Image (cartoon, helix red, strand yellow):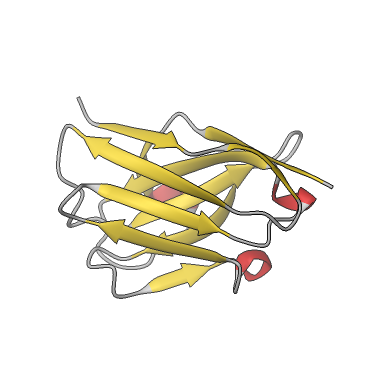
Length: 124
């Protein structure tokens, strides 16, 4: 069974940092672009960051550029999201997802495997 499991969420003060992890099991995702998305209460799920299959290319939504860094370790079948300078508006459930595309994909509908999500709460 293909599975993505996120971890690393929690409660942090504004300006703080968290590192999210997404561990994949059931099959290798080394040939897949991997993305992070988030959903705040009452809002739609939105794209946050994506990394291509090799880790050589990344792309971020404007609101997190310069603060968040996505990375991956294909040997460990794991993707990370380092979040620095967190703001209250970053509060959301964060999801990792996999697509069958190799390269950068920002369209949520092109991701076919999702984790269960991890809560990130940033207090002011």
